[in-house]
Length: 331
Image (cartoon, rainbow, N blue to C red):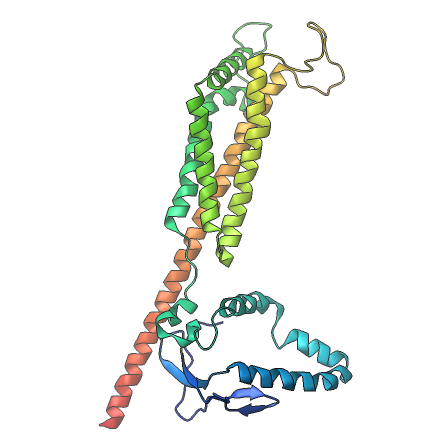
């Protein structure tokens, strides 16, 4: 639906009666309510109000027409389902009628000038809820960045050999192992703070996705998927890996000391540490994706607000010119 206000000519007649039994009729009570233009809040017309007795007449007329419709075959069924709207318009219609379901007897947003403008305003995302998402995401990226010096020489490059005949990554395996043991042995308060921050991010998503707009579903829905994938990587790979490193039991714990697992079903020390380093990288990419989506939503909302502001400006200028023209004609 275009936000541009359509001019209403004085000679144009707006039908304000009720359409019942294939004809326009006045309501039984004769009561009317005012309808306002949702763009500028101006009164458009006074429409007859349908009360229960008018609804009863409508139902009786529909029941009387049902046998004839049943005999008209497939074209009647198709027209009844399609109702003149393309598929892409269905969601907007459903939301409109869902909003009007509890807004009976002319109390809808189109019938009250104070709420008329709200009918066309896009649902803006809450800045505070966005902060609840972006803050924890940046916090986790900072934690991962602190681990990057340990992961870099294990995953991304082959360091120079310090001792001939020794794996050049061995010193870095040991440093990463000591680092992970130190983190896992930190006081319980540290892990509790981490989990509180995770919960804060989830709270931000819940706040933004409560009664979501289309933009919320696209941007925040995708951000939530990435965020939950990150939580899954943290629980399944990082937490489990830190426990393995702390215990010092790599591979198959059922094997006796000194035995080697040749089946390939279990990871050894080096592979386990590489998986942990790769998990940090995967988690960082997921969190960067969350930030990109949130930035994209901010840009889309800003662009839409700028367009609406520009349209409002043009509309006001047009109204001013029309008013000036009318005053000149009166003179």
